[in-house]
Structures are given as structure tokens and as C-alpha cells.
Image 1 (cartoon, rainbow, N blue to C red):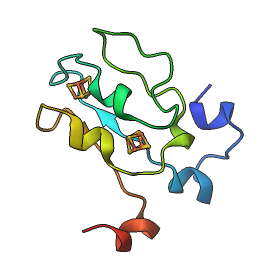
Image 2 (tube, rainbow, N blue to C red):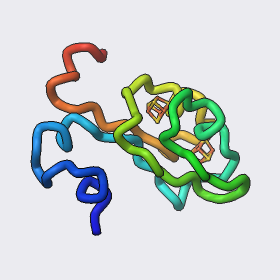
Image 3 (tube, rainbow, N blue to C red):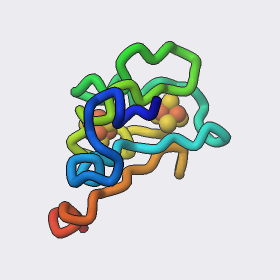
Image 4 (spheres, protein in one colour):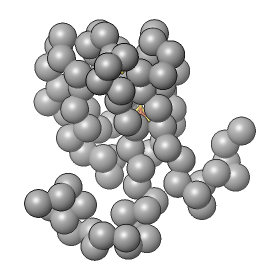
Amino acid sequence: MADHQKRGWPAGSRMEMMNMPPVIDIDRCTHCGLCADMCSEDVFYGSQKKEVPVVSYPKECWHCNACVNVCPVEGAISLRIPLPMLVCYK
Ligand code: SF4
Ligand code: SF4
């Protein structure tokens, strides 16, 4: 079952499109865990040290970009900003 289905959001619904958590490039990620430590929400809840962080609670992401800013590896983690929110970002 897809994650959005577990959380009750219909595929393609407005809520699903508004929630776009970060994406980790597993080939670039060095498993440092800084992004999981930095996140003030439970987005990476349950992630283990020295492993690629897991996005456990995507709907908790509020697109603050802190996880991207703290990552020491260019391109290892990236944020996708929902279209309606793009006006708030440079
Ligand atoms: S901060 Fe970057 S390199 Fe470190 S675990 Fe997160 S995505 Fe991987
Ligand atoms: S953008 Fe902010 S809220 Fe979302 S996962 Fe990264 S640190 Fe957490």
C-alpha cells in the first residue's frame, strides 16, 4: 500500500500534491544523519545512525529546507516545493 493511502489521502488529491517531502539520493548520501537530526518534525522518525534516513512521516514536512541546508553533500537531499508554495521561495 502506498504511503498516501496509509494516511488516508487519495492519490492525486490536493493534500497529496501539497505534501512533497525531501528526496534522498542514496548514491550520494554518506549516512551522516545530520538531516534527520536537524529536522524539527518527525519526518525522519526511526532513522538509524549510519544508514540512509527514511522518510517516515512525509506529511509532517513543512518545507523549511533545514535538512537540505545542513547536508554536507551537494545533491544528496533535495526538496520539492509544492507548486502553490513556490511564491514563498526564491
Ligand atoms: S545530511 Fe545528507 S549525507 Fe547526511 S544523511 Fe542526510 S542526506 Fe545523507
Ligand atoms: S524540509 Fe524541514 S520539515 Fe521538511 S524534512 Fe526537511 S527539515 Fe524536516
